Image (cartoon, rainbow over all chains, first blue to last red; front, side, top):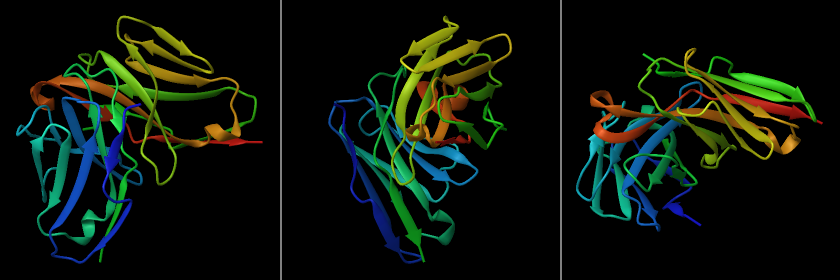
Length: 113
Length: 118
């Protein structure tokens, strides 16, 4: 079974803190994605990566950065957390560039106070 | 501008009946579609997908229909069970300049919350 693991289920951080969300997949997938889910807005793509050290902006990259130093790990970084970044963050991976299926992690519920 | 639309935020059906969840898209270049199911505080799980070369794909109680001319797809669940109660997301695979070039990307709708009543 493909496993996508996010480092934390729940996080509470203070405004202005630098926050790291980690995601690891164990199936040698090429593509990895970070989404956030907010009520009434669905899943919105923040960043994605199709190879080590490669990254592309999604629909809402402002206030975020990413890092992919190893194929299995994709990190989302909130440079200076703000309350409007309180959300559910979801990491996903897929095998090929031509996506036919993507697997999600369990999600990280981040609260910024 | 929303490329994938799920116009019904919620749907309630009786156990044993059919659930029909709808999804519309605007970009005729989309050629692959997926449905995900999501429980609260969990990540989405893949349900079923369909390629644009097909008009139907079936997997057990789940069937997805694609009408390319109408840019519409639907997920049918028969019979519906209380355990099906969740939020269902429709997603399209996009390519091209708006979606990072040749790299594929998943574009999601806002979801439909399905409640199946016993």
